[in-house]
Amino acid sequence: MVLPEDPKYALKKVDEIREMVDNDLGFQQAPLMCYSRTKTLLFISNDKKVVGCLIAEHIQWGYRVIEDKLPVIRSEEEKVRFERQKAWCCSTLPEPAICGISRIWVFSMMRRKKIASRMIECLRSNFIYGSYLSKEEIAFSDPTPDGKLFATQYCGTGQFLVYNFINGQNST
Figure: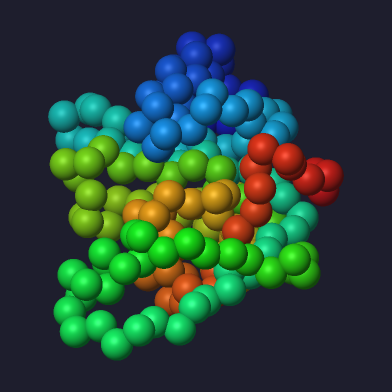
């Protein structure tokens, strides 16, 4: 975990990784809401390469994704294809949240190996000292189609919390 008060060389490396992650996720080079309140988790492989990155920030509110009813789907592959293509929306009613995951990324060749889940588990136990966050206290920034599939699987529901990391919110 890299924190804002860590040495400058570590923060510079995190910035380089964030730029690469943003490009891979298709983000514009969007600034973090409040850099001094972010926590970055890096997943380092045995051969000392960064294969996962999670950037989280303190937030106050999230908005519940409104889950559509799925049509009758025969296979898991059809379900994934449908989920990737459909539009989605969220409630306008804010719900309390503590942690916003502005980015979560895993190197394409290392996906489906529980790396993202392990990073979130680490985040949940280290985001606030002495506290373990529930899944209900975490919100995801506007997820990519694969990110939405991941959040649905991780949270156990398609009605997880989202937040807008660009517009930001008042920090707690």
